[in-house]
Length: 75
Image (cartoon, rainbow, N blue to C red):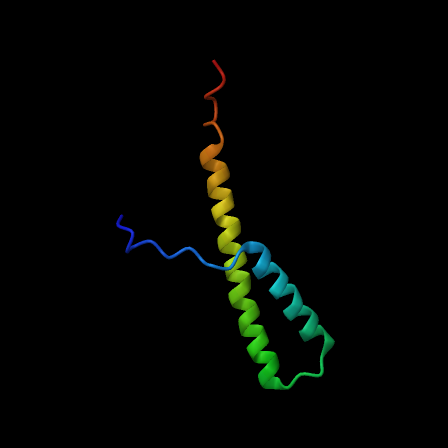
């Protein structure tokens, strides 16, 4: 697989995305927004949730790769 086929690594960290998502949730729960504002925040929140999931999936892959194979230490 060439580097062109791999998606670019996001520039936003997991922690940044999570914090922005938490802020969006607070704003939506606080109310007082127009429908358009609410929809825009909801869409941004969806994108941030996907980004957080990306980071979590990557972390899970790295942990799996670093863990010894099942039964490798049993001998």
